[in-house]
Image 1 (cartoon, one colour):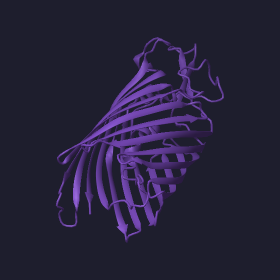
Image 2 (cartoon, one colour; image 1 turned 180 degrees about the horizontal axis):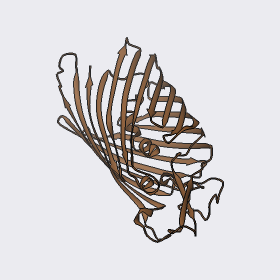
Image 3 (cartoon, helix red, strand yellow; image 1 turned 180 degrees about the vertical axis):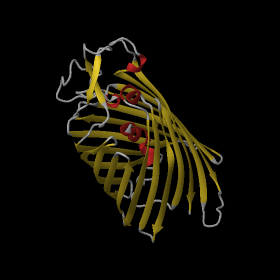
Image 4 (cartoon, one colour; image 1 turned 30 degrees about the horizontal axis):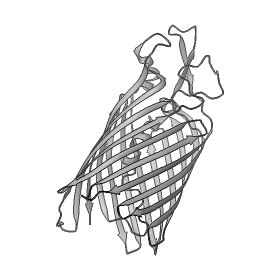
Length: 378
């Protein structure tokens, strides 16, 4: 569940944490109040988030974020090997941006806690404007330190560390077009699997033809990803945005992700629609059914590391209010978004159907992600 939440709600958790497209401009002073909700595959995740960003003088901007996940899970993984559960994750982050000439330096720390998982991440980034501020080069680094536990075993403690290196280049191509190229490398080392998840193997002594044993992952993983994003502004103030990302790792997972979006302003509203397609291969140690117990050195049956394809439709609407301000507030916006997510797992079978071994249908997931948030500038 932890991996699913991270993948599907990453942009929500990092609300407002992105860098400005132009490094020589500090982020605007603002406060965001957000509520998010994810529903799909027997899982419900919801909770609030608050972001406060404030400048100190003309060269420093500080930000603080508080975020909560409340998880209720009866997913396919849970109902086939364990009991439904509820848990809560809280996350705090502090960050700062320092501007000096055409150079921007930023640093931050994020701390996340739940009943059986703690995570702390430190990040640094430096951006430099060049060639008349038409080009921005960004270098970034982050270090994460995680502790994995089991709620049913007080003596279970496992650690893993994560390092991320990033290189980004943003270019104003024409008066109406901007493009960004990003490359990142992530290295993970330690306990990388879920302590509760099991794999299944063929067992002639079992009435259903199979039994379960704990999964076992490699202790290292290196991922490489490169992405290209471009945005073109149309004459009537609308915009088209396209993105592509290629990903490959040492577990033999390879993926392609592409999306296209259209943004259209109308009076005090801004509407947008986005379509995203993702396709990936499975990890070399993934099997839906292993031939026997301990059949291979590494074993995994997490559906998120299987071969899969997904499609997402996203619709957003933003409304600007208080155009003339109110007290110390300059303006405000209210935003609503709906993501409709569909995932087809090409190797992971739905054993909850009770079908004969080997004839179970492949699992498919439909999910909705809702977001509502208010932003105030001052």
